[in-house]
Image (cartoon, rainbow, N blue to C red; front, side):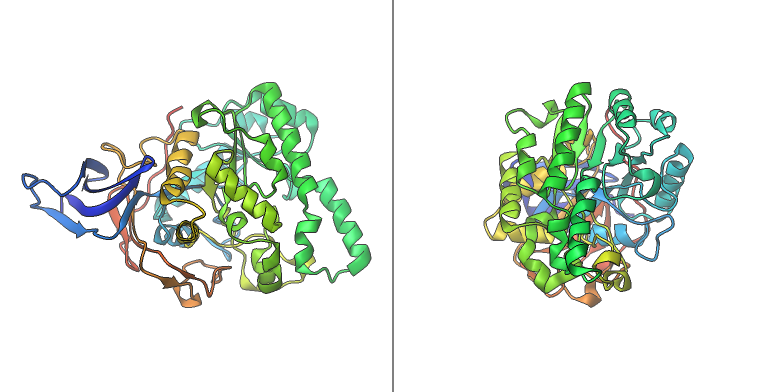
Amino acid sequence: MSKGYIIENATIINENSRFSGYVIVAGKKISKIGKGSLPVDIQKAGYQIINAEGRYLIPGAIDDQVHFREPGLTAKGDLYSEPKAAVAGGITSYMEMPNTSPPAVTQSLLAEKYETAAQKSLANYSFYMGTTSTNLEEIIKTDPTQVCGLKIFLGSSTGDMLVEDKHVLEDLFREVKMLIAVHCEDDHIIYNNLQKTKEKYGNEIPMHLHPEIRNTEACYASSSRTVELAMKHNTRLHILHISTEKELSLFRNDIPLIEKRITAEACVHHLWFSQEDYQRLGSKIKWNPAVKSLRDRDAIRQAVIDGRIDVLATDHAPHTKVEKQNPYLSCPSGGPLVQHALPALFELAAQGVFTPELIVNRYCHAVADMFQVKERGYIREGYYADLVLINPNKPKLVEEQSLLYKCGWSPFEGVTFSASIEKTFVNGHLVYDNGIFDESERGMRLSFNR
């Protein structure tokens, strides 16, 4: 039986630097990291040797916002298919949202999701506790060392998961001590915009009007109110998927991340696409919040660079092909991204938008720091060996037959990325190797230093 792996001659990108070196993986963890060539006195016997010359070695990405659709919506995705796509894309850990069927709004329903993931997920996992207008007692029971956070939908949800009552929100922001992640859109503004659009177009609303219906005002009105509420109660607030330039004024970059009580996230689709792309891609880029103007996209990119936006994510939210072919009013919002998020980000690096070091900071280190994830998100001795080998000079075309998403489509189909994910380790296990999976081990439940 192998002792583990020796990854040598890699270009290691970690903690805002890059260097040529080696990493030794023993069991589930990293046992040694070194610069330069592997010392001759290190015993290689029993280890599998990987020559990573010309490759980047980075920590596995941690995605703090995915919708993997299990339970109840498994025609779109599940806790086997979507984590499999994630590890093929270099995402080794994820935090999944509660708006499944039934929604994870009780401790017993939340526990059932963890039990399912333990049986099926190839990646490490955590699940948000969901919020309704009546489940505060259940929320308070949540163990913050074992659950990533609480999710509140302040827009774009249905039934009990849409929380708008001011008194309920006051109670939540005052009483909940763990991180609260929020979707911020004002449904009243959206409703009025939609009614005006219907008056002009009836039921035949063009897809490119999505960012005018779910516009900047709808996002900013909700985000600004939520920030005000968090400041009032000193709540640990995290605002998901920022989509507008205007919202960026709500966030700071003059203090370290660990001191922030209010943080923000940018998603890959808001960094890659813009309003111009609706003509070509239509419903494939229909998300909530909407993909907006080129100016918004470029402003969000700059905020990632200067630190007003703290972390990167996907908001991976698959729907079936049939559903996405529906007309605007019955077409669901969301799309699959986890298999291609890192290649897309490294493509932006190749274009000079970001640096690889910045991508690793925002998609690995900062997520671990912000959520206080235990022993992950960095290449450090004693940390879990969640590692990704990337070939920055191996182009790969996104084709339908290569997709691992259960929904079977991608907004990136036809795009050639200049970098490829070659190997992904989860807890020291080489789960993905150039298109081949070793599914003999499952991922682990994330724990948190809180």
